[in-house]
Amino acid sequence: MSDKTVSQSPNLSRRALLKAGLATGVAAGAVGAARADGDPLITEIQDWNRYLGEGVQSRPYGTPSEFEAHVVRRDVEWLTASTESSVNFTPLHELDGIITPNGLCFERHHGGIAEINPADHRLMINGLVDTPLVFTMEDLKRFPRENRVYFLECAANSGMEWRGSQLNGCQYTHGMIHSVMYTGVPLKLILEEAGIKTNAKWIMPEGADASAMTRSIPMEKALDDCLVAFKMNGEALRPEQGYPLRLVVPGWEGNMWIKWLRRIEVGDEPWHQREETSKYTDLLESGKARRFTWVMDAKSVVTNPSPQAPVTHGKGPLVISGVAWSGNGRITRVDVSIDGGRNWKTARLDGPSLPKAMHRFYLDIDWDGSDLLLQSRAMDENGYFQPTKNELRAARGENSIYHNNGIQTWHVKADGTVENVEVS
Ligand SMILES: Nc1nc2c(c(=O)[nH]1)N[C@H]1C(S)=C(S)[C@@H](COP(=O)(O)O)O[C@H]1N2
Ligand SMILES: [Mo]
Image (cartoon, rainbow, N blue to C red; front, side, top):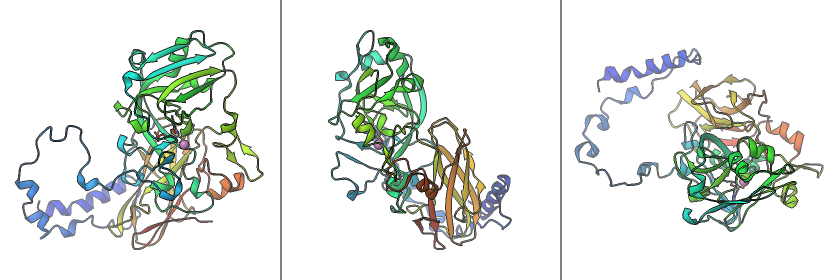
């Protein structure tokens, strides 16, 4: 590569910034161009350029490069008493686009991972139906199926942050979310096959795992956009995500997305009032609870830079990136602030914009090397704006764990390191 080719990159990047209308007027710094001369990685032939590599079939099921070994789900040991009833977190700061790779989707189990041979798996529909039915996996695959991308967020995502900034990394503060393309059968078709009685108002899906988890879901939602899914991102569900069958409840909190789905009972009232009013209900300051808070409201977070992804290249062009999502539909706008919410710039949304799916945003800036208080706020197609944490606290108090969709702040310091902070 000649010096001439290399030295073009800063001009190109500046032009790109200008085109996006985001250049600040300060000349964009050179993107690495000066170092090419005399770099042995340019002037000397490397081993991987000299020797034959492994052939096809050396990796029958491909895995990421060994240099990506740090890109993994992680847990927080002190958070739960056992690993079987626990959670780990998606490494959001290592990902791009809107799809979470299967091996990196966070896991939340109440009784460990059920290992089920699909040949032995059954789905039963009973209760207020004309004909109780039992389906094999093969039966289910004979229904017309659909492909749809949805995020799944645990209601407890960001729950540790209600009282103040706590966990140092977006993997831990926001990583109880994944965004996947599901292939499955609309639940409506399966319910119609069994025939729903006129007084049927609720369904209660149940898992085949050791926790035999059940949730109550109103019939209106069941007949709207729920899926009985067997594929994620094109391949079979992973055991961690409910292989061979899980319920997909678009836009609604993760605990309703029953994994290892084995039974759906149809009824005229919600089951398990106990759970509805304790485990997954938001406790308010008054001692009263917010019940039936199923929809995950619009939320966003800057994934880069963030505490686990510091700025290592110094000042000059800096790509600020993040994700946004809303259980009420599409994200129409994301604003980014670099001064703790005093001034906002509208970020660039890039990639598919699908309802109840993750959206990707970028703000390309020319960083002058001074401290930043980075924030993002999402707006959805209903005009709903993501609130600040203090606005949320004013409305709900600090006893909550669930549904914290407040604006996150990262303090980017002059040396490029990043910390989880709060601004008042
Ligand atoms: N059968 C069963 N389904 C379940 C759970 C479970 O423990 N057992 N956990 C629920 C909770 S609380 C969440 S947040 C999501 C997590 O889905 P994931 O493991 O694919 O991230 O699954 C839900 N479905
Ligand atoms: Mo959850």
